[in-house]
Length: 168
Image 1 (cartoon, rainbow, N blue to C red):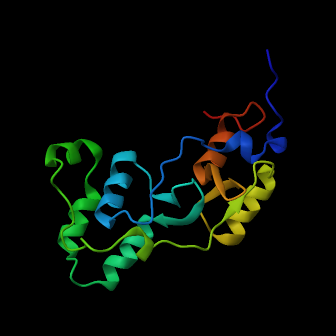
Image 2: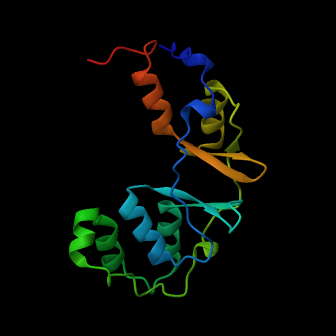
């Protein structure tokens, strides 16, 4: 039986999620919203055809875009954002935000990336998240996406590690 790594010796490679939901820069915003809803995520890396990370986009970016574009009505967008996966399936495949047909991920994504390497320590990861005020870090090697670490990954590691606090 393999002994679990000491909590403070864990690295990005130990914490990261490798099955990462991604988007491409040419994806429409209604397609992006569907990805968020279907996968229950609040942000995704944006990659090119060679798996190079070119940006990151979040629900906050969608909200900002909506606020800047009055043609997208609050009622329509609010309704869509409240849908969970089961409700989305009931609405059907034809549902989309018609007010934003020409907007694409490239129009709202951030290219100011918060990245770490697989060897980054748990302390470095936590400090970087605090310093950058971000909830997710992309794990990259030579611009290629290797994984993602969210604040929930840090909390999960702390809560489930044998050296972590006992949960009652």
